[in-house]
Image (cartoon, rainbow, N blue to C red; front, side, top):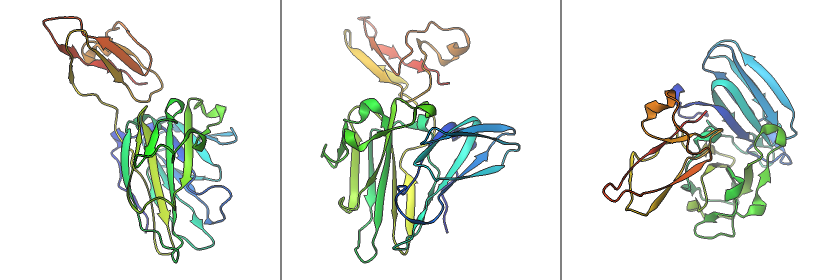
Amino acid sequence: MIGDQIVPVDQLAKSYIVLRTYPINRQVDATEYAFIMATKPNTTFNMVDASGSSTLETLINAGDMYELPVTSEYYMVEASEPLYVYHLSAMLKNPVQESGASLPPSMYFIQSRDMAFYKSNSSAANALNHYIFVITHKDNIDGFSVNGSSTVIVPSSFSPFHANTGLSDWRYTRLHINAWTAGVNTVKNTKGAFSLGYMFSDNTCGSYGYLSGFGDFSFPEISYKCEGQSLTLYAGYAKNYRWWKGPAADVNNNPTIIGTSSSYTDRQTKRATTLLRLIRILRK
């Protein structure tokens, strides 16, 4: 039996990256699938694979589902309305392995820089296979450490996405980690956020899931700085950014835009007031 915890519709998104769990050159016993389900009528979505080829589909009714055979290294899925994407891993032929399934988070919900997971105990008799899947911005690929070591996940581990995906600033990797220490492993990045998935399988069970969360990006409501100090806010990943000072309601009142990049730095200049109002972000 395979399953994953359901996610509320208001926590879903329109953009997903589906990374194949096993490399293309591994002989598998069952086709890997991504099941794409609409939450609203007349939802169109485009799927771009690793060769740059694209397929456009439409789901007429909410609840309608499309079965995508995951025969490419990855797929970029972009939709007109929020989607569920349920990813079922493949199974190895020799030795026979079990499969797992996961609801991968949207690429624009990636916001963690420090994640830990439990690697199950490996056994030669069970021929366990362990993989992790990492997606991050290209500027972050030299900022990784695993259990304190910076020599495990290195820039050469990563590959670019095809230009047709629109992900020229993103990188991904799939790492075979059988040799990693059994137990808790901690992955960190000093430069930015990343998405992390983990899968293991043997001839008795399989497990697959993402540690990255669902839900929109958020900041603390208040930051305190002394006069002359600066504060840099990082907005995570998004398609577009608009920064302004003032209430969130100003989004509908033509606010004065003070920045359009993924980060913004503000300096405290008033001696009497050390309260710096949060700068809001609008994500499209």
